[in-house]
Amino acid sequence: MSHTSCKLTALFGGNFDPIHNGHLYVARQLLQDPLIGELAFLPVGNHHFKSGHTVLDYQVRHRLIAKVLEPGMLLWDEDNQAQGYTSQLIQRLQLKYPGMRFGFVIGSDNLPQLPSWYDYQWLQAHVYFIVIPRPGYAVIPPDPAPQYIVKHLTPPDISSSQIRSLIAKQQSIQGLVPQVVIDEITQLYTTANT
Image 1 (cartoon, one colour):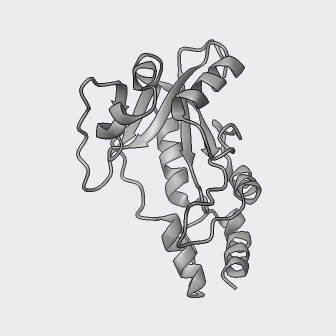
Image 2 (tube, rainbow, N blue to C red):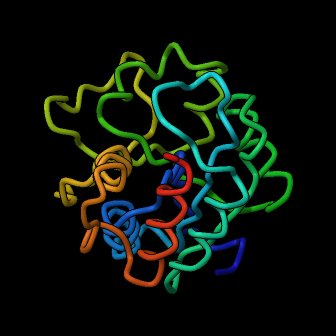
Image 3 (cartoon, rainbow, N blue to C red):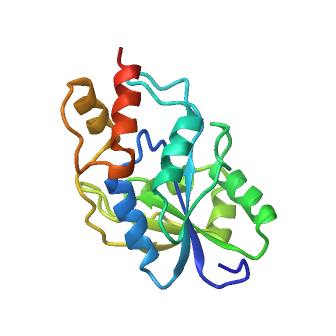
């Protein structure tokens, strides 16, 4: 896509620990929107403060995402430092990709919290938020509201923690992750759990 295009580049951040079919469903659905030209996965860096489960190393998660990319999907490693703020990330991207317009994918649970985000006034002026409704969280825009669009999607009920739990119990994850990485994901999490 041309960086001067009026279409948005959707920024889809997360742990992707591991990437699963729910993530890909959201990405595919967003790419069908005429406002969105491409979608960039932004896996976050290693979060040493998280406990309760093993987080695969950033490079491993990055490699798994790279194996499942489809047309219109990109993989950027702009958010691999596990620090900084959304506004700083997008400012770095704007310098790297002048003229590109960004949409930041969030769940409806985050929408009311946006005014508490660092540099919210800048985000209001420069970023479109692509809001995905989540069960139990109404789409309630904050005051003052940012620029946002709501994408009413019904992703499959899959979570990364569910996948890790099934692997720990030596149960199948068939249908939950892309077939091309199912064996590798099973092996990686089996090894991580031993």
